[in-house]
Image (cartoon, rainbow, N blue to C red):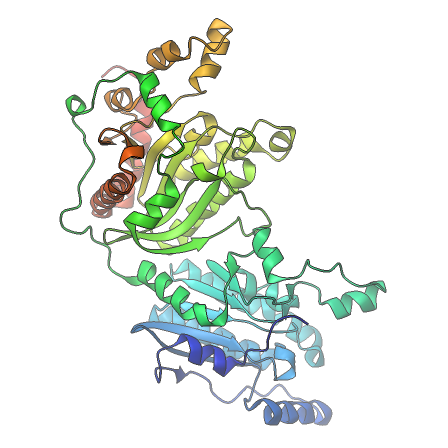
Length: 501
């Protein structure tokens, strides 16, 4: 079996500040074990050095409080029975009551067979407690250790806002030994591994034990540090006379320069903290988008956007990318964090697979979810804004546009092909359709324009820092408003768009 066996105490000691751990455990509840099972429990306790298969408590990471739950595999393979379940649920409920984030680290063979069905249904109780914790808008972080299988993976092991796993860890629903016994053949190799599940978008990533403390620290910075824009953060230009009156086609050409900075440069140069996430959590991932927790100029957010470095004419965003966008929206709602969306797309995928996997319905659901999201939202047209893939991320409380960013139902060449039956009229179509930042500001589609001096590709670092500062200013202003006010204004904005004043 790949991977190491990290003990519960080793995990706790590696993550928490030295000497900060305080146990929340009490004597395990009496499960009425018969003599044979009692002897097994006693031997497990003697061998493992703990009194149950799970340890709970609280401590700090760089001084920030966090609750912690860690399975101990040496105690009956980390299996969960009634006593272990009660300990887990009590810890979750206490973390919720005290208003602290929770870090859970399962390693388990699943349900404790000695307790049968009664132990099996305990997973419902644990999942319900996690759901209540998340409903209180408190962070739930999961680190899967080797191995994590069965009901544990199918309940509290799969409910994290962020989920990472130990390198080489066996992670799966049905344990390979059980599969072989039931079906008389080996489970396909390479499927139930942390690395494969990360690649497929089931979990966010793979992290060695020595990096988990740093990951938790960055996450807590985003989740619990007060949000307030730094002094000196610059807002976007809102006066149309300050936006250069240049041909729309010029902006289209400049937005397509390979050197133009995108969302990755924005994170690298403008974010003071970031926690990369990946995939939908439901077995899909799309290389044309990027999801992260982030902090810009003193303001925390969930960041989701289209990644220009992952796109090409042959690789454009599909329905999985939009489902990942909807995961970002759920994260923002559950964590009560603002949502920042970056639009920079060649357009949505035109393929049989995209059609059959629901591209158009996902665009519709993204728009509906975003326009009704309770948390503050800011969209940034960073570069190209083509078609439904751009529109899906547009309807935010505040919409910013890079000076050479643009928004259109089709690329100008496509519009030219429809109207003129050629692509040579693309420059004229770009001008006629009002796609450039100056036109978008005049029509009320965007609220501000982020300057380029004269082109973001010529000053990439300075440009993305201006973007980060402008985002922070907008989020700071939105945070001072009630959710009802933001929602009503958002709906009214799109209700009146294009109508006479």
